[in-house]
Length: 164
Length: 353
Image 1 (cartoon, rainbow over the protein chains, first blue to last red):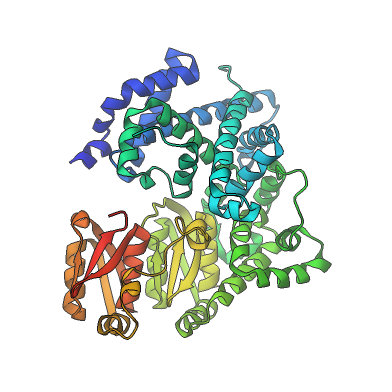
Image 2: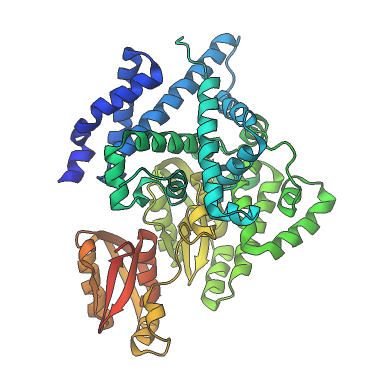
């Protein structure tokens, strides 16, 4: 029964206030926060069958943050198209987002960049990275945690914030 | 419970996300805004990075004519992906994999031989590089190297037979809007091989997928490429899962290979002998686990039941002429379950129990 409540979205009610607060912190705008939460809930309903009840709050916040990144990247893309005389092929559509990722990575220190690349571009787990770098796995995980937070901060700083 | 430690968030990412949390952690995440925020930040940033890895499977998956052969795949996309996402490392250390993928032709043969010596540990990097070489003449070389590496891992006679079938049997197929699981089910029927998709995966539909006079191996390679998956032959079964689950050497992440009961009795034990000799053919979809156990008990004579925590679980499996021990492994291990001996019966349980 609980699973059904999640699947049809009714189970999200207890989390709405927290989501709105988080969305306002991210967007600094009531109107945008409202849109972001709506977008988040629409995605959540589509994926609700996969989520385990008990981690719903954390999962919704993860989606909210992800949708916010998408909004930021979409703005970069729209701005690029607006500025360009002629939009390029759709195959190039992800390039601005990737460009921001590349620049955010380039802004990190070499060690943070290295562990992130090993983890996300070479599909290695923290244990495998630790083995290769000959460091304790806990140290590598801690490095990864801080590297991700730094990356996140750079990424959001580099994404264009202004509304078009 | 206190807040989750920094490294625990990364451990959860390694293990597949929130599903890997323990009951106490779940309760804490529900009540602690700081931890929820930390998780949201780390997990969402991880998604962005994973997506930014040079690949374009999502777009490539929209239309993949296999008849055109792998070498002709999306040349333009391949070039764009390579150009738009250069390696963030300033000076990557040259290694055999890098030389094979990017080095001059004269050095590639030696690099290939060296990679073959590296064995399994070279596979994740090569699988991750597939997208970068789509459309390039090296794409086929890359797939051939992966095949050779996988083939060298085990020399089991059943696996050899399956590999031979994959390399020699050709097929035509055409699907529109079908899921990877439907395409694999077709391959399963057509080839009379056991092809199993990791049951924990949720895959979307592929707009168009067609093959004309392609070997089963080529078909599987392209299907796995466009869905971001990979395959391997294990115990006579073609197993399709994520590269991380198939090739990670981290036991917390990799697909396990054997059930707990094997450590409880010797190979000569009567139960062990029965499990490894009884052949099962089964086609059940969305079947309660208890019904599945009853069926196995009835057909094998080995008493099998479910643990209390798995009472409401359902399973789907389609397999023919597979020994009971491997059938149990394929059904239980990807789902995080295991099998142990209790008295005179086998019990399927959740590993966290």
